[in-house]
Image (cartoon, rainbow, N blue to C red; front, top):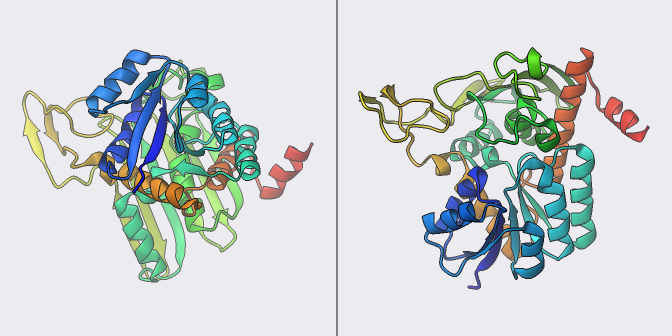
Length: 360
């Protein structure tokens, strides 16, 4: 079987997460090149995963021009997603793009339209959809075990991003609504056919108005309430004021039961250590004392399975599953934009408000 040749754009945090998926699919995928302006970081990433014959490039546009590949995986800062995707799609490549799809709905829409014009695919890397615990929960919901889904409550939070780009709104496009709440919003949309009917949100405001991160342009706390065409409701929350490591909690309530999911602190290990263990969970500030060291964290959060799915789709020339397509990334971004408008105005936002204002 011919391997899918992958060009990885970016060599930082998300690139490492995706790399784990490609390495575990070594029989079907080959990383042929890594492009990052920090070529040393790219070399270190290649060495860490023991890649052979992997080209290192310092410019993503140059790499897209010169590297022969089947799939381009965009793990660049948010503000570069649109440019990289449009270039890659224009050269006949399928694209994997990290969340959020872009820093604006306009940019995301251009990406989706370009994919349509070129006949290529955008695979939207929403890892929650392929997290094993969430996959199983979705099966349970769809088999009717908790009856009709009525309400979803979900939260992603930690103490702050590692990325230097997060503080600058021009680079990242928003605060925790865009960086973190995009996960529970994407899940809520996937479970309810992407058809929201109203959104009401509140945020800390950004800058001096933030709860903790006063030097951050975007908000460090946000909550949004959503209603859907099928009558279901959702409340999503995100923040950068949670110490102790990443928290990903999802609660699903139906007419005949409920489900509770803990993605990040569901380790079967409990450890007490005076010096601290080398690693416990993503974003944990300390591991001294009691901790719950993660077991195969990259697999459990969904990165390995999503990459496996994208490789299969690329080989077959097929669309990804609902929730993992370019259009899903665009619709999730539109919901985030509606939440920002609601928070700014203190009013409920309806789909027709977005359509009317976008047409002006």
